[in-house]
Length: 389
Ligand SMILES: Nc1ncnc2c1ncn2[C@@H]1O[C@H](COP(=O)(O)OP(=O)(O)OP(=O)(O)O)[C@@H](O)[C@H]1O
Image (tube, rainbow, N blue to C red):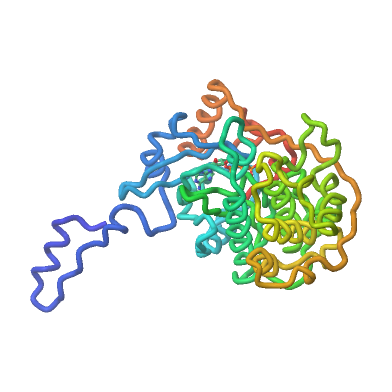
């Protein structure tokens, strides 16, 4: 950046037009995609624990504020992906160009020593998982559920059908739907998104994603298409309809949500009675036509045959009531049973936090490599260990 002395010398030259004043965005470290460790440390109060807003499979997420007042969420990635710096930058560059009302924007990134951090716009009202399943919170009303379903469907349709290259999210779940203060949905976690450049089925060597949401073909063979996201989205619709978690070993639901709901959906769609399926906490306060649309979309999205699942844009139209539900419902068949365990944990102690942050700082400042398993607060789930951008 130019000093004020340098700038004034520009004005003294007789033939040269004066330079415009520096843009406040550039001067304040906004509108750019790379951040230094010091900039992010300063934005997050030195990565202080009181600024931790979450912990996922990647590592900690800190809230921060840039000098221009913009609020950010800084996600520190665990090391060990084996991905080179240029490959990382190339992926981040593509992802940071994706902007949509229902997608959380990536503002930039930081590579400091062996430490990588992603900087996202801050979304203030926690996640769908928190509001749907959190204890002691007000029951989410039907209109809000429908609006969240539609918003996230639009965000996902944009990734699948309007981005070049198209983007498969790979980890659609209630915890990755962030909410703004008006309960508008924003799809998050592009750290997991893998870019798909061709029109053919991509066979992944590693299955990523979260148990309970995984499409059967992806879980068993790693075969990945947009339709794996559609399956996960269908599971999320079921959560909105029933208020139940995808897998909940603490209650009487012995099967996964998908297996429990399949026969009930078929029955409800046949006789038009949704009361057994619908979240009891709604106390029957839902619009039956909208419920029929959402159930139809869920049933179509979780079809065993990936090919028969609808595209996200079809789901958007069906949820909006713009298309016939028969388009979605053809060929729905009850499927096989599968029980998945969820191992995500968001609990972490002061001591494990301190240990993690010590290593994090050493790594960021001293270019020191350490294996991802050394993160004391990290999740033990295989899928989490594999998630690196
Ligand atoms: N952009 C953001 N704005 C506000 N809060 C955020 C943002 N990104 C993440 N968070 C918070 O941090 C938490 C952890 O996010 P993260 O994406 O790392 O993990 P996760 O999605 O819960 O788990 P996983 O890594 O298993 O997908 C989120 O649940 C959310 O509360």
